Length: 369
Ligand SMILES: *Cc1c(COP(=O)(O)O)cnc(C)c1O
Image 1 (tube, rainbow, N blue to C red):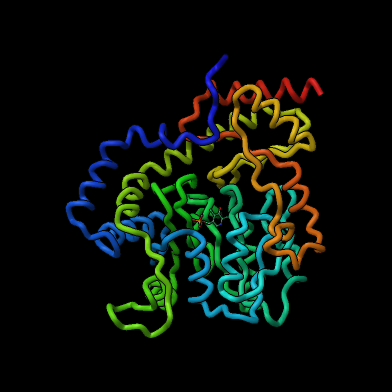
Image 2: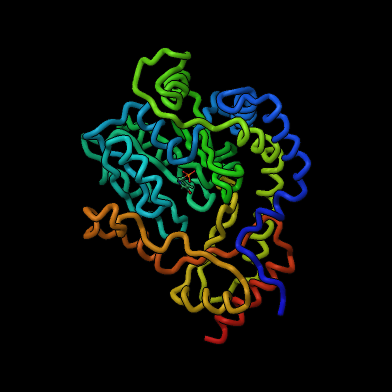
């Protein structure tokens, strides 16, 4: 029996960095400055430079990065915020936590990202912001989204939780709207060894307000101009992220090579493959998502050969009990994606032989049907 192929092998990814990670731990432990210290400041500078954004503000996680940015932008109860009909549900929950109402717009079937052609119809006098998600690491159609936002005076918050390093028209995610929220959840393209998040922005006033909001509404110790939160990226996670950030581009390039290998090996099957990079979009392949009406059968066959796959995501947010008030709405492209999507392993440490074995197993199972 061949070796099992895991979906994501973080132990293998981190193994070559072990001594640097241990040094990072010792540095933080000996300084014993655990919150809002020099590691966070250094990481914020390094990640801002990486994204070519003026500011980076570390937060406790990606959900808080989204929520706090909406609040800092003045989004409040009674406001509406446009979100894609298919995404990880955190995008929607951030809007709810800000007290506003998420207004879903269906995705475009091929890009899996919010369909700009359906945006205008969702805008009302209460609409204040749009959150385009760069789903699976592929940038949303930002030119079209920003043009509509500008016309209606809307705040654009990128949900870049799956898109660290993704390219769009020669720029990186993190500077494609008014602000961007990142997650450093361990499984993301850039992940901590625990929870973490960050906001990037070129807006000085927004950055200042975020620095306060994440820290009890206190931009300066024991001064509290507003009611804030406790949501900081801690020193230990910042130190680990500083070890990993210089490897991000190499890991993303490896993901891109695996995606190209899949694309070459899986042509001509009853399977819709994701769009590859072109002059406008450079996805970073947080997930490599194929769609097929035979999804469940294919997943079971691969599992039988010890090949791990996942479904991102089996239910769109409007089908979740948390958003039961939208249960009777229909977003056909989001629902079709949920019913037919399968994420293949695309871990940067995966070998060419692994990808070959996965593709061969898929060919065999779909040709046999
Ligand atoms: C992971 C993720 C989030 C939330 O990030 P956390 O750090 O887990 O809170 C938000 N949006 C999207 C699209 C995500 O994938």
